[in-house]
Every structure is written in C-alpha cells, then in structure tokens.
Amino acid sequence: MVAIILLVWGAAAVAQDAPPTPEERLATLTVGLDTAWVVIAAVLVIFMNAGFCMLETGFCRQKNAVNILSKNLIVFALSTVAFWALGFGLMFGDGNPFVGTVGFFLQGADNSPATGEAYEGVFSSLSWTGVPLAAKFLFQVAFAGTAATIVSGAVAERIKFVDFVIFSLLLVGISYPITGHWVWGGGWLANMGFWDFAGSTVVHAVGGWSALMGAAFLGPRLGKFNENGQPMALPGHNLSIATLGCLILWIGWFGFNPGSTMAVGDGSAIAHIALTTNLAAAAGGIAATVTSWVLSEKPDLSMIINGILAGLVAITAPCAWVNYFPAVIIGVVAGILVVFSVYFFDRIKIDDPVGAISVHLVNGCWGTLAVGIFADAKFGGPAASIQQVGIQLLGIVSVGGLTVLLTSIFWLVIKAILGLRVTPEEEVEGLDIGEHGMEAYAGFLKEANVTPAGTTFAGDVSEGASL
Picture 1 (cartoon, rainbow, N blue to C red):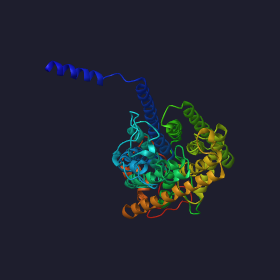
Picture 2 (cartoon, one colour):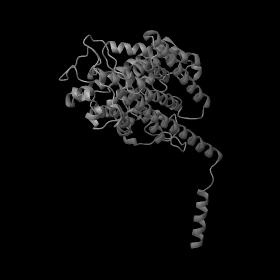
Picture 3 (spheres, one colour):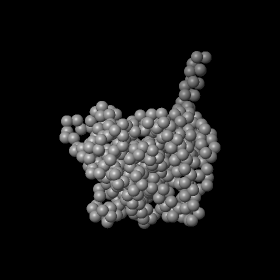
Picture 4 (cartoon, rainbow, N blue to C red):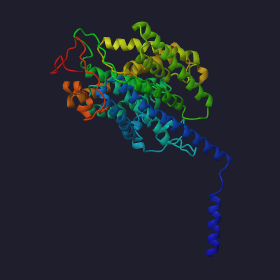
C-alpha cells in the first residue's frame, strides 16, 4: 500500500512539473522583456533627480548649495513613501471619475498579473499593460517625484527646509494624484477625450503651478529687485554643473517619454517617440539661443539650458502622436516661449531662480495644446482639430485650477503654522549654515558677497549687508 501511494504521488509530481507550452513560454518572455524595459525606463526617470540636483544647485548661489542638494535628494524619498501610502491609490485605484478610492499601500489585486491571466483587480486604469504591479508603481512614482522636485528650484534660497518637506508630501500624496486620476486613472478628462501621453500637463504643468504659487507666497529673494523695482542679477555659482544637469535630464527623458509605452512590443513606436523627443529638445535649445542672442546681444548659457528643457517638456504630451517636422516646430516655439516667459515673470516680480515655472508650467501648457494642433491619427492617437484644441484647453484649465486651489491651501496653512521664509539674517548668510550647519565647499574660496547697487531690504537686514 505504501509503495502504491508513493508511485501515485510521484506521478502527480511529474505531471505538475510538465514543461510549459510554447504559448506559455512566449507569454512569460513577453512579460519579462516588457518588465525589464519599464524598470530600465523608471531608473532613467529616477536618475533625472541627479539632473535636477545639478541644474538647480548650479543656478543658485554657493551659500545655498547644500540646501538645494538636500531638497532634491530627500524629495524622491518623500515622494516614494507618500505615493505608496496614498497617491497611487488616489490616482490609479478604481473609484469614480474624480478620484480613486482603493489600492492604498499598494493593496489589492492587479488586473493583469505577470502570468497573463486577466482577472478583476482594483487598478483597471492600468490593465492595458501586462507588467507586474510593482513595475507599474516604480515607473509612476518616478513621475510623481519629478512633479515634486520641479517646485524645489522655484522656491530656492529662501524657504524653510521643513516647509518644503511637508509641501512635497501633500503634493505627491493628495494634489498630484487627484488631477492625475482625471487623465491617466480613467477619470472624467480621459473620458472626454483629453490626451497627454507622458505628462506635459499631468506632471510638468502640475509641478509648475505648484511652483508658481510657492514663489508667489514666498516673495522674491532679498536683493532680487532694487528700489525702482528693476530685477537684479543674482548669478548662479556653477554653470558647469548646471550644464551637466541639463544633459542628465536630456538623457533621462528617453525613459520619461519612450518608457511610457510600458512595453517593448512595438519597437517602431519607441524609436519614433525617442526621435520626436530629441528633435524637440534640439530645436528648443537652438531657438532659445537665437532668441536670447537677439534680445540681450549675447548667447546666454542659462537660456540655452532652459530652451532644451522647454523643448523636452513641450514634446512630452504629443511625442507619440506627432511627426518629425511638427516636433521641431513644437521645440522651436518652446525655446522662444521660455526666454520671453523668464523676462515676464521677472517683470511681475515672481522670483524663480532656475526658471522652473517658465520651463515646466508655460511649456507644459504649450505642449498640451500642441496635441490638438499637430496630432496625426495615423499614430493611433487623436487627430488635430479645433475640437481637440478645445478639449486640451479644458484639461489645462481644469487641472491648473484644482492644482492652484489645493497648493494655495497647502502653502497658506504651512505659512500660518510654521512661516514659509527663513529669517532675513539667515537668508543673507545662506541656508547651508542656517538650515544645515555645513558648507558645500568647505575649505574653498567663498564667493564674493556684493550688494547690488540700489538694493533695499525688508526686515532688520541693513542696506549694506552681504547677499
């Protein structure tokens, strides 16, 4: 009897270990390749945080370098936790046309597991891609972190570190995912026919609106405007690392845009998106160079950098659905817009040390409109039309309106409880010492602290104090 039981048991084990069918092997291989592509793309997007670190630090003054680096480093850690706990469920969880109501802490079944067997889960808005839920989350949290780090540059050199930490948690945990649900979570804007392939509005404009409200509530840096209200130059301390940051971001964008296919099955689509992305970036950099050269009689490196980034932001929404010539046009317009936008915000006394608002908000809106102007239906997306322009405009206004409302509440509550700005004395000394108790370049020659002529100060800081 024992022998018979052992024989039957062994036969059952052999039957269970039967080799997979060719179809099963193909499905497993497809999911594996798609997952590898998504993870690699996610890593490229996450590495963009290094680009933001370098860019923003180089554009700001030496005495605030540690502060800028600290904010850009911690913001992705904060974003990861906030998006895992709350944001991902609000954005992609099933619920209603306005917000997801399930899937918090990444709990709940995925609609398309790695086995290829479809079943009912709680993230139906992501069921179009068959990669595992963990890969979907990793890719999306990289985007959420990008939206938060955009804010860092616009509020640089005068915000309290703790305030930025709290705001980042609120932005990624609440505001960003709610508007994201409208577009990518199967919400009401998606149902109306609003298109945004990789996030000109969902990511960049949201970060830009948040940055604009933060800069407005903070006010300009000491010495930014003289007694006549004219903007004064507060040059960044290291354009070498700012340029390096631009190049890192340019490379990272090849994860941002092509990675949004979330699959490797259509290689032509990936290549097409990569090329439209690169063309727009190049055209944006050239257009910004020429524009700044004409306006200021010098080719301004900071404008070249922001022109490239403006082209990248603008092409992010339409990259999959436009041909090459329109991609160049989109980049050219972005490069021109960013130069005039920087001058405009200076004129209305919105102090943005790195040009984040001009790059991400202005050109996020432009790229979203470009979908309605240039999209070609042969690429599987929308067709350019007046109606599509109207829908795109509705999406810009709707997402912008809620983002401005929520982030204004966040900034005002934080201001009421903690105060937004460091003290004038701390701002003059530098946030590296006041906020962190260290210097970025200890032992090296410090930058000259020169007071621009005609500068006036608020508070107790004397007119002759160093900046």
